[in-house]
Image (tube, rainbow, N blue to C red; front, side, top):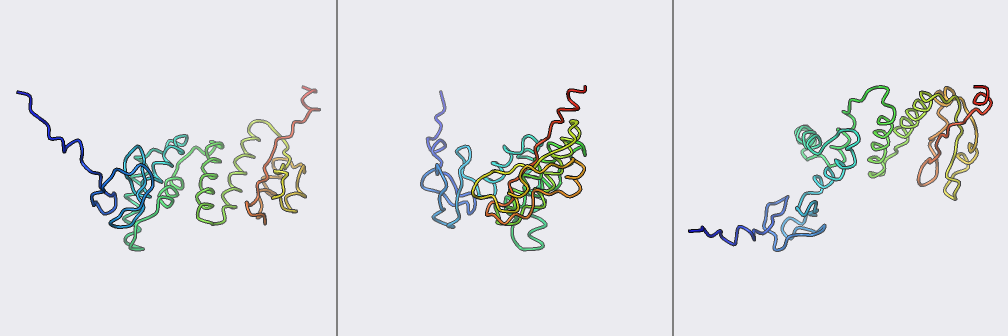
Length: 214
């Protein structure tokens, strides 16, 4: 005789990922738990904490660096132990992603991925309202090194040419530097006074004379 499976097994009510209390309905988007009043997030139709939602989102974004969700969860475990001892609280999702990026071991000549990693670290700081200029400068260095490796000798500065460009950045528009000069002085990105910070970038200059000489 075929054994009947209790219908209740298929209709188990979801639980809050924080307090483990039963929820009346399965959340389909961000909502506050009626018990602990913490915000529940939904990823792949599953209720998760804000921290886990952050890790899931960043794991997809960091695939290019070989960082997986399992890696981020391992960093979460290790960092949580440290945070609980020092601060008596758990780390945020951004703290965990920062640790993962900061612990990344890339080949010193993998300029492209080193640049992207610095940009992601800058984005984390920006999300928290912190100055990200230092990491954007590191990203710019890797871009210059990448261009140098590709055989370029000079670069020029290009800005967004909109109303947000500050006077300092506007004065640098079109100026040319050898790559070694740019690496030494790093004129951009600078500590721009505009709301969005410095958005200038380096564009390689093609030496047409040497091109035709070849």
